[in-house]
Length: 265
Image (cartoon, rainbow, N blue to C red; front, side):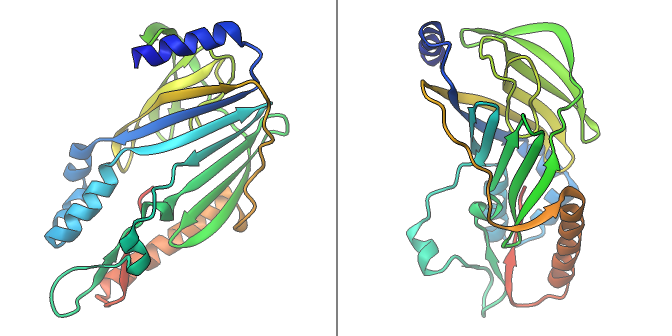
């Protein structure tokens, strides 16, 4: 990691006019919090094979890529390579005598967030229960409060800022040495790239998103918004998600033998 940031510092010295940034992030969650939560207690009630499959996917670090060029950005989930067995049958059978089935595919929850800071719009492509949506909204940066705290990340001195996010406090570490006001997901709007952010998610507890790699390209890229999916507003999407989640729970309570799909955001 130290060698990476040394190389990165040299790149900035010789190429401050670079117009495209490609940044990799990794998101991690707290396994203990999940298992101590109500969701964890429900997971523990499942058959052992299913429990292991769900838990391993929930706590597995998730990789993302942020591409920024000329005031536009794309923040994308890094899709996992498809396994050979997925082509044959992506159902995991649990129990004897043809009982219920469990199927999990992390690519089901892949998302793309497009932001255009000049037009103040964002478009998010999100999959929910095998259906794709395009959520259109205006750009809303968090109300950041820059603190006096600093810390070193690699070879960069970073400043800390805090804000309220989903009824919790989020702490971001940003570097003014990387002169773009972007960051992972909704964490942007600071005078430098957000390289690390931590907050407490109501479902997954302590959550951290950290930059792991960055490339600087000397030419600009044309970034386009995702176009596939049903167009909805943020409020409409939240309503659909609530209805589908409740319907999913009712189906599982019914004890049907159809495939059981687990959604993890």
